[in-house]
Length: 337
Image (cartoon, rainbow, N blue to C red; front, side, top):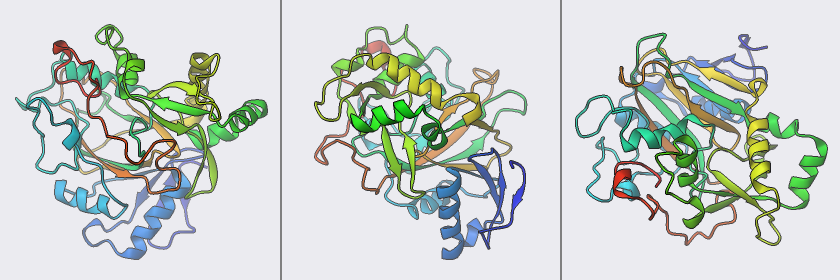
């Protein structure tokens, strides 16, 4: 039952479930002197719950990155630093998930190109599914938050349970045809702000391919790997887009994000951190009346997946893309187009 304190199987941490099938708040972690035993229990909790919330971690940027490196090799922002674009932070492993203008330090103009691009983050997705090598864990930390009651929470969806509760005939179809999702960051940007990106054609840019039905190695459960970056579906045997692809994309995403599969994590104070496994959950940035009024400074590290399905159907020689070549002058500052 959600809200109950779980006594086992953990010895060094305390777990409070947030939803009947996934997500938990974890307490009792000594982030300033984290033992191997306690770290392994965090990893085990991640395998079970997919989302773990930690309050008041006391981390700064350097500690955030050091802790993240214990999970594996980290992604970085270097490929996005083109056209004079400069990082907001000293550490390239930190991704900016906030609403602060990197040049002025002020709240981002809601009509700026980056704000339009950020609207795609408000649709359920898996981080880095548009990359040839996908992500395992994302670690998001609060540095500055809007006042309580102004929104800015983060929502999660349980894509393992969503897979298990697909109609049997659809589960069989996904497996029999080895369906593959073709992912593009430009696609989710356009979904989030279609008018602003009306002249961007995601199909004209590169896409990365990952199987839709795949086993989540840490738990052994099957997962529905979908989300807003998935542009279309291909037959795994022929490599051709399947008939009715767009309808099936919409259906699978709608199925996985039904209210019964979702939970909302509120941010209480700077130092709060949420870790999630992109291989078994989807997430989205929650909106609210804070937009254009209050700063929401969140910083994320992203761990490269090292499981057997990390590279999906993509070559390890694929050149990683930071921006889509179709970007127009009005898109300057937008991420993913």
